[in-house]
Length: 129
Image 1 (tube, rainbow, N blue to C red):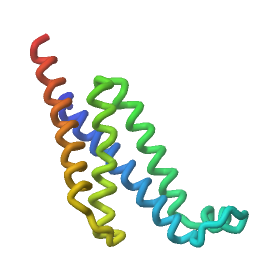
Image 2 (image 1 turned 30 degrees about the vertical axis):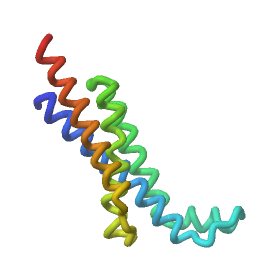
Image 3 (image 1 turned 90 degrees about the vertical axis):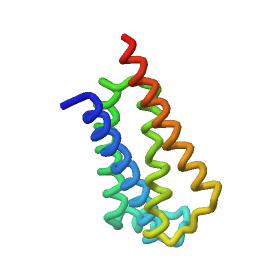
């Protein structure tokens, strides 16, 4: 497998698993409402399967991140790890009925553009070696 394909698959898995975890946390919070600092609330949280989905998603993300860090340069890797913010923004519209404003859309575009720029600069620096 080529390095580019390894990075693409790895960062895709990282983004999906991180996004999945955040969505699961949101679903768990919704099902456990109302939020009260009480044992009953904690029991409601632990009874929802969504909290376990979040834990599994974070475990997958952690294993993927550790694997990527063994091979990828830390700068672009760290930037790419924040693509989950974009994933959460995109999925929250159809799933939770959230409305994106122009600032959120612009911010998401900047995150993606930043990751692309860092990846491109890393590719160019490897080409000069």
